[in-house]
Length: 400
Figure (cartoon, rainbow, N blue to C red):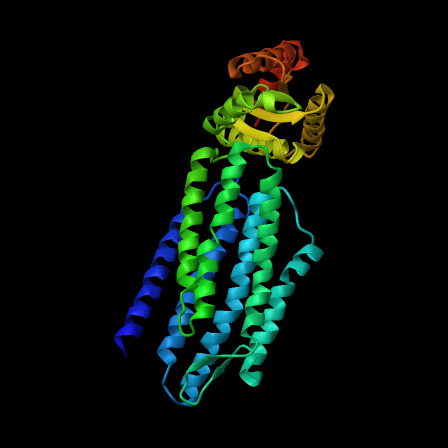
C-alpha cells in the first residue's frame, strides 16, 4: 500500500471520527420540545460517516483481483452513490424543518421528495450490469461511468430546491435573528460545492465527503449557538434573544410602514398547577402552551418564552385588529386543547397587547410596561381570579 493511499485513508478516518464525535454530542441529550431538526441532522452525520467508510473500502479493494474482492468493490461503490443522494435528501429535510418547523408533510409530499433519490437508486443498482455510473476493471480498479454526472445531478436537485427556498426566505425576512440563521444555512454547503468542482476537474481526487464533514462542522457549531438563543424545554426563543429582537425592532421601527405589536401572555394560576399536580405537569403545560403559540402565530411573528410561565410575541400588523386576531386564534386553540383534556386541568391565559406606530417615540421598556399592564388588567378582571374558582382548583388537586 502506497504512502499516498495511507494518507488518504487516514484523512477519511479522521473526518469520520470527527463526525462520530458530533453525532455522540448531538444525541447525548433529549428535550421534550424538540422537533425533527435533530433527527435529520443526525442522519446527515451517519450518512457522511458511512460514505467516508465506503470511500475507504473502494480504495482498499483497488488492485486486489478475484471475484470476492470485485463483488466487495461493487458493494462499496453502490453504497457510496446511493447514500450520496440520501445525504442530499436529509439536507433538504433539515432545511425544511429549519424554515417551516410547523408544517406537517403529507404522504404525497414525502413521495415527491423521494423521487430524485429513487431515480439515483435505479441508476446505481443497474450499474454493475450496465456500467452507467462506474465500472470495475479486471484489476479491480474503479473508473467513472458515462452517466456518473446523472447520478450527481439527481442528488443535486435537493441542493437546488433547498437553496431556492433559503434565498426566498432570506429576501423576504425582516428579522435580524433569522437572517443570521439563513446565512449559515446558505454558506454551509459551500465546502461541498468546492469539493465537487475540484473532484470533477481532477480525476482521481476524492475530497467531496471530507469537505462535507467540514460543512457538518459549520452546522454543528451553528446548532450549538442556537441552543444559546433557545429555551431548551419549549424550543421557543429565550429571554436573551427576545431582548435582542425587541431592541432591534424598536431601533428599526421608523423604517417600517407597519405597526409594531407586543403581546405578553402568562398561564393563569400556574403556581397552583405546580403545587397540585407537580412540576412535571407544569413543565408539560408550558410545552403545550408553547406549541399552541407557535401553531397559531404567523410565520413572521417572533415567539419567545420570556421567563417562568410568561411568553412574548412580537410582530408587525397593518392595524390593531390584526394583533387582536392572533390572540383570538390562540384562545380558540387553547379551548380545543382543554376539551381534549391534554392538560392536567383546564387552563387559561391572560394577555396584554401593546401596539405602536412608526411615528411614535417609544422604548422597549415603555412597550413592555404597556403590554404588562394590559395583561394584569385582564387577569384582574377575569373570572379565573375569583375566590370560588381558586378553592375548586385546589380541591381538585387534592383529590388526585
